[in-house]
Amino acid sequence: MHYTEDTEYMEHVGHLIAHPRFQRLGHIVQHHHSTRLEHSVNVSYSSYRLAKRLGLDAKSTARGGLLHDFFYYDWRVTKFNKGHAWVHPRIAVRNAKKLTELNKKEEDIILKHMWGATIAFPRYKESYIVTFVC
Image (cartoon, rainbow, N blue to C red):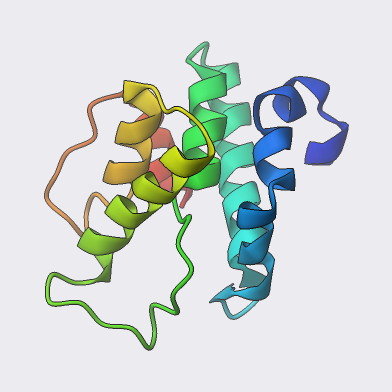
């Protein structure tokens, strides 16, 4: 099923996907084969389906997964002293909070999705799902 046909999923994140600030991600290459918007939706929907299958908080998983890379710079060009893996989740949380309120689980999903490249362990099972799907 295509994510747009999943009414429950779209109830959770459709308004975020449609937001003009989020739509800007469609103009940014994430990986060689996808835009940041495509990547974010793919991570979100795959994570959502897995969380739902496992009886976990699918809504928070969908929202955190969608917003995990909500930043606008090109990580191949822009460099930070602390490194992209540490900086971009914090920027993503800040940008996400401008669009919507985040619960603690959603914030943890966004902040900890780079676990492995960073040392902060995810607090929730849903955070691990998004980390592994990314």
